[in-house]
Structure formats: structure tokens, C-alpha cells
Amino acid sequence: MSWDLYLSIVVPVYNEQECLQGIHEEICRSLDGKYTFEIIFVDDGSTDGSFAVLEKIYQADRRVRVISFRRNFGQTAAMSAGFDYARGQVIVPLDADGQNDPADIPRLIEKLNEGYDIVGGWRKNRKDKTITRKIPSKIANIIIAKLTGVHLHDYGCSLKAYRHEIFENVRLYGEMHRFIPAVANWIGAKTTEIVVNHRPRMAGKAKYGLERTLKVILDLITVKFLGSYSTKPIYVFGGLGIFSFIASVLNGLAVLYFKFLHPRPIAMNRNPLLILTAILLLATIQFVLMGLLAELIVRTYHESQDRPIYTVRTFLQRDEK
Ligand code: UDP
Ligand code: MG
Image (cartoon, rainbow, N blue to C red):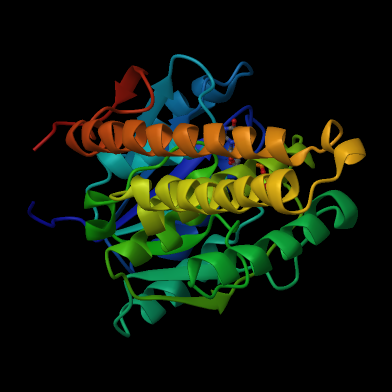
């Protein structure tokens, strides 16, 4: 890839018609004269007038490209599409609602050029609802840092700067855009963070509530599992299998002990140990078989990774090189 462009700004858009002009102007104001850049707006199946506004912005500014999805695929898919089509050496995603401040971009890039692959934004002074957003997010961030071994204060902040190469090896699913640093860590990316500005929305409504925390927790389990065992799932399932096998044998021995060496005629027919032995033995077989199935799946998974997670309806862009 030849790098004519330095910077790709990726903006996921879902029903943000009132914010788009404003955020476009702000981005241009912060970057004009500093870098060569493009702005990729990804319309994530908006049902308001967002696409019409984007078309207008596209007509007026040659640096703008617009991808429009057939339906709403979610913020991660939208960002992922932007990353796929980005042509800049550095990629910076940014929310369309104005909560991230484009004025922070030059500082992120400065930090990146100190020799990092990813610079995260830390919304230290976050302007969101405390109970449904800030507290769950704080707890989630601590757990994510512990489990993934990448130490950031704020995984959820969209505003980050990435070296383009990172995405050659990172694929995103679910709500996984927040785990890019964790996933990139597997391929040895260097990550740091700086404090960024955070503002209330310019207009429109937040698209998420408390329910997202649940998805994040499930994604975290996936990430942890994939990160540690994706090439050897049998280690996890087989490990559980061995554990339940040992428990089953111990139980079985206890059953024999009570039957022959220490008979307790009254208790025996109520003794759960025999049933427990059988259940644990079944669990052992299940775990081992599941491990073997997972091994099969993992092989398919690693060999079929270039399937996109979205379908594109239209794609406004100028002459492709
Ligand atoms: N977004 C999207 N698809 C969705 C939901 C949200 O592209 O299904 C975009 C949205 O337009 C915004 C960004 O993702 O640019 C963050 O969304 P929001 O501001 O609602 O989330 P919050 O800032 O509350 O985390
Ligand atoms: Mg927002």
C-alpha cells in the first residue's frame, strides 16, 4: 500500500442528522493544514435524514467518503467497515455526536509518534449518566484491564489513534471495538493512553443504556478465551474434563467405601454420591467431546477469516487507486 494519505478519520453514524455538519466542521478545523486526511462516514442504517446530510457533506468536501449500510449493524460493524476502507497510515475513529473532541486528534498523533501502535483516549471527566453509564463502565474497565493485561482506564472511548497495520490482524465482532487494544496486544502492539476532552452530545439521543454492559461482559469472556486458548480450546475443556473425572473417581471411591468398608444401611438409598459420580463421569465425557469439537471449529475459524460482518449498500468515494 502506498501512503498518500496520513490520516483516516472514521465516524460511525446512526441517526445523527443534527450533529453531522457540526462534527464535520470541527474535524476540518482541527486538522486543516496539519495533516493530509480523509473522513469516512459510515452510515449504520440510519432511519432519519443522516444519509442525505452526509451526501451533502460529500458533495462539498473532496476529502469525505461515505459508506452506507443496508441496515443497522451496530457501532462495531460501522467502525470496522471504516477501518477496512481507510487509506491513511493512521486511523482515528470518532463519535458522530460530538462527544469526542476533534481538537484532541493532534495530541493523540503526537503521542503515537513517540513510538506506539495505539493511543487510547481516556475520558477522565466523562459527560454521561452516572448510574447507567459511568459506574458500570468503571467496573468493566477494571475487569478488562485485569483479564486482558492491557492497562487502560477507558476502553470504551471511541477516540483512539491506531497505526493502520494493526488492522491487518484484528477482526471485530459484537461490541468488540473496545477490545481492539486487547486483541492487538496478542500481535504485540504497543498501547498507551492520554486524557481527552469529553462533552455532552450536540443533539440527538444516546443509543445505548445499561444493557450494553452485559454484552461487554460476554465479549470479554470471548476475548479472554480467544486470547488465551483460541488455538488450543482442548486445554480449557479438557482441563475441566480432567477436573470432573478426578471428582468422579473420588466420589466413586467414597461410594465403594460406604458400601463395603463402612456400611450404613439406612443412609445408602439416600446417598447422593453414586448419582454424583455418574453425573461427573458424564460431564467428563461432555467436556472432552466439546473440547474436540472446539478444536475442529478453531481450525475452520482460522482458515476462513476474510468474511466481512456487514453488507454495504452504497459507497460514495472518488477514483480508487
Ligand atoms: N452508533 C452506530 N451504530 C449504532 C449505535 C451507535 O454507528 O448502532 C454510533 C453513533 O451514531 C455514535 C457512536 O456510535 O456516533 C456512539 O454512539 P452513542 O453516542 O449513542 O454512544 P455513547 O456515546 O453513549 O457511548
Ligand atoms: Mg455519544
